[in-house]
Amino acid sequence: MIGLKFKIERRKHDHFSESERRMIIEDYLQSGLSKKEIWEKYTGNKTEHGLILYWMHRYGYFSDQNVKNTTFASKTDEMKFEDKNQEHTDFASLQLRKRISDLEKQLSESEMKSIAWQTMIELAEKEFNISIKKKFSAQPSKK
Image (cartoon, rainbow, N blue to C red; front, side):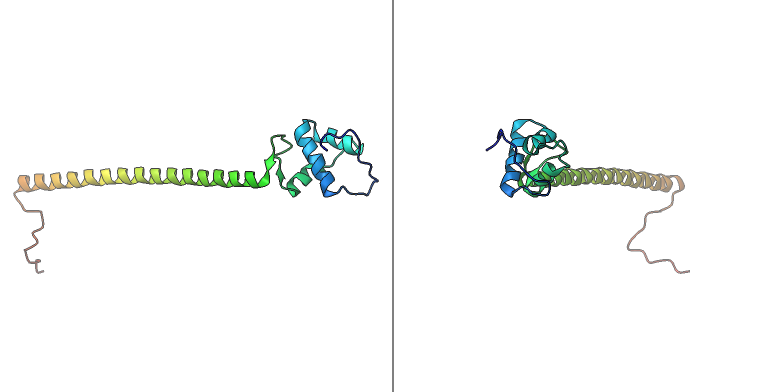
C-alpha cells in the first residue's frame, strides 16, 4: 500500500485511522519525499502542521528533526541508553583516572617531603651533635 497514487478523501474534521497514518508514515520514510509533499499527496493540503512527526512519535517511530534516517523508537532508546551508559562509563573512567593521577602526585610529594625531613634531621643531628629523633624507650620529660 506504500506509494498509492490516490488521495485519501477527507472532510475537514475527519481523522485518519491508525492504519492510514502508518501507511502515510511508511510512504514518507521510503519515498524520499518531504513531509509537505507526502501530506499534499494524501490530503491535497499544502500544510501538514507537524502531524506526521507527531504520529511517528506516537506509533513508535523516531525522527530527529525531520531527518529521513529513522528507526523504531525501542531500538533507538536502547542505543541511547547504551550510549548514555557508555558515556557514563567513559566519564566515570576518566574521573577515576584523574583521581588516580592526583593521588599519585600527592604520594610523590609526600615521599619527597618525608625524604627532605629525614635529610634535614640527619644534617641537624650531625651539625649540632644533638639527638632529634624520638626514642621510644625514653620516658617523657617532666616539667
